Image (cartoon, rainbow, N blue to C red; front, side, top):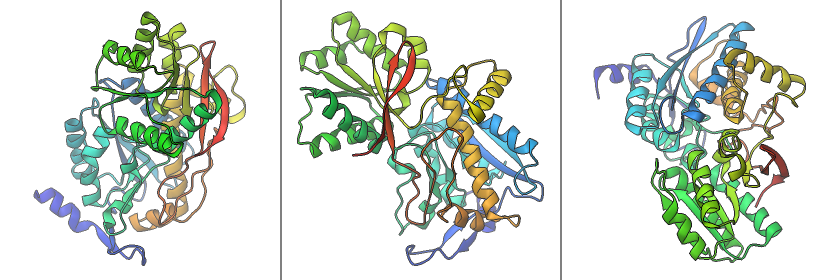
Amino acid sequence: MNTTKAALLGAVFAVAAGPAFAQATKVTNQGISANEIVIGTHQDLSGPIKTWGVAVLNGMKQAVEEVNAAGGINGRKIKMITEDSAYDPRKAVLGTQKMVEKDKIFAMLGPMGSPTVLAAQDILFEAGVPQLFPLTAAEFTYQFDPKKPQERLKFNNLLPYVESTRAAVKHMIEWKKPQGACIMYQDDEYGKNIFDGFTQQLAAMKITPKSVTTYKRGATDFSAQVAKMKSDGCDLVVLGTVVRETIGAQAEGKKTGFNPIWLGATPTNVNEVPALGKEVVEGMYAAGAFEIPYRDTAKGKVKEWAEAYFKTYGTEPNPQAVIGYNVIMTFAHYVKLAGKDLTGQKFLDALESGDVFQDIFASPPTKFSKTNHLASTVTQVQEIKNGRWVLVKDGLGF
């Protein structure tokens, strides 16, 4: 351990966490001053999922500016430090070390990607820095062992991959009654969560998968995977993909006359899929957490938010921007609840208090407790119709 980290950890204080926790959780007080709270985030701003990272960061910046323009949180303005991970775990680790040791962040908010978040999160926990609302719904971002007190610092308000996949798969099988349920997924932590949700739900319904196929992150050729699924007789394909792979797999299917029901995991439920895929993806389904706000049909506060986003960034608002905006607004809610005399422990207590945060987008309410650090599992299924995502079924579970 270097001297900077040693000094940092020396400033971290331990607190009693109640009978559910074997030891006290160390929570940092760094990054808090009389007039400011310093937070950090790492996003993919130049790599394979920059269509997510850029829009998420825009949504976060919009919320920071809104909060600060209103006087901050209990008189403190938010200062946000950003590092570009390029979806590279090594860069995420280096960026996180910098933000913890040099920038002295109070919390890490909305970090992007399963492999990048997983690689860097232990740096945060060791330093007593909370990891809040990451842009991955993998189980490791909210499940924690009470016997490992530093894991108490992880919270997620994103719809989880396993649970959302299970709910969507259950609905589609009961509705469409396919004879060959299959999956194609990215060969990493994200994809494994989609695979787990798919296999768990099929097992619960006593169904055997017809085909399982994977691809390496960054792949562009899906001919082998599609040929296998076609040969195996798949008529429902669950996609544990992001944007480019979602379109690529379906384009290959169209080319070869393979036309199953396509069901995407939550990361496919973004505007870029119909905008870039056009007729190739028309009719595909996806799991989602909230109805996508379109600027020309939004109303009330959502309309104001959408117009402000378009005016600032010159692009249409999208689900990624909604998620980024909510990252900051959720953080602000619980910081305000912690009170003017803010400390790391008071903030952790506020998060675990059971107090509910409701966003402006009619998402399921956010609520945490000492034993549950996942906000919600309520799932929707949406379909691409005429180039837009349209709600098919809401309030799904499994």
